[in-house]
Image 1 (cartoon, chains in turn green, blue):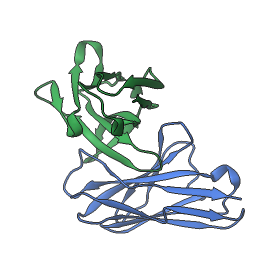
Image 2: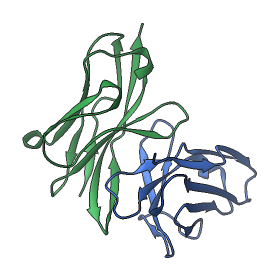
Image 3: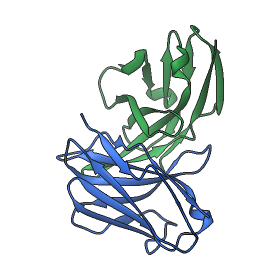
Image 4: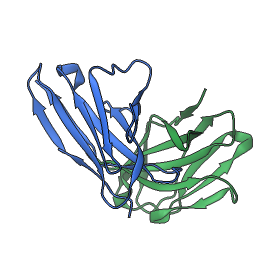
Length: 115
Length: 116
């Protein structure tokens, strides 16, 4: 069965510091992997996605993520966090079927940014 | 591009009434839309998959008679919460997949439902 684990519920970093949010997945085939960000009361915005090819993917807002098959991980990183990055981040795995993907989401990691 | 809207953004209703939430793809056609429910401080739980012109597919444990889904066109899906009760209060989010094949879901801003 497909599942996504985000082991960190809350993370606090100082503005300008680097960031890494962890994501581990369980999926029987090659996964489609996504990171979304959700600001309070808002929907989800796609940060980046991985389907195949280069395992290091670049996204919007300076984020990147690395797919590591051996570790079943897809961790999100940013070298220097800005106060506007404070939000909740969700990792998702897409299960391909019937010409669309059914998504399974992790429980989310809430990021706080200290000034 | 790939903008999804939801209406209303916030609704408060009395217990026993029905509430309709609209999900629209504004600049693309969507053969498939998804409806999620998000409880406070929790992740999104898929409720159902909505395909244009056919019946929705509900996830296990979701009452199809309570959460009525209609996908009448390639740009509109509606979720009706029938005979709403306080436990139905939640944040409902829809997403859409572009026509011709979906490997990315585009999400609406969500609808906050409060049932008194």
